[in-house]
Length: 356
Image (cartoon, rainbow, N blue to C red; front, side):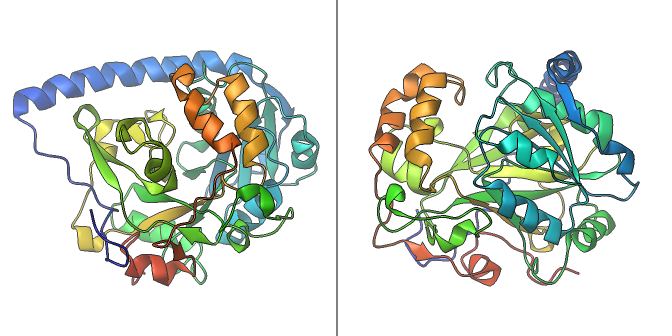
């Protein structure tokens, strides 16, 4: 693996070529699976109760953001501010049983449509079924951004060029989606000893990240290659990287009703959407700044362990949650201090600094 300070290209995967027979076989299975996922999403719509509807305001060219949230009152003020500044026009959000003021806060936002459900997050494939339905219902033909509340999208020149400019460029260059890597930010010292105020940029508290140690994992059935890495792999999953959280995502996509996310935004169907298109030097990729390790991580980990809703095999992650509850210090001597998008381009964590 690359050493600290080495420029590392982690943003463009190149799955191995497939034989014609294998390609046809996998394409058939993927087509059948996609239809199952579309049917699941259609059925899961019944689990959603509409609390506030702003969808009549959606214009043809609007960029839409979809998200499932639970107890995110701390993160939402900056999350909304950041993505509004990028050019998101409307937010379509599902609340999954919040009790910290999240619902009341979102109901007060003029550009948020809000649904609520108390059904199982895990049984909805971690909210993917709910959002697949909302994207099919409202997002077809729109550029759609699908994020968790602890993720902030950035891309080259995001401080001077908004999402309307980026998606126009993607359209012109035949890129149907934006590939990203999730960059897990962490503080120096135990998270519980930090202080974060609602509306504050999480990177002011979580100032550090790992720039190397990423592990690619092939998903041949989906024509995809995903990445694990970051502080959680380094500290908790060194011996079993396939159990570590997946960091590669495709959260920005021009949606079509025939599309379906498979696992969060890590992979898509039809599976050709997962395969890189165009020459690598022509691709633009982004980064999701991940704010999981704010001071509430200790309490949230205890809650997640009890609810057992966040992993397919939640009973196998008791030690992982226990480690987070112990309030660990993720910092190490090879950590990089976060600066800006130029730094991430230089480190090879995203590319396309001269797009547009």
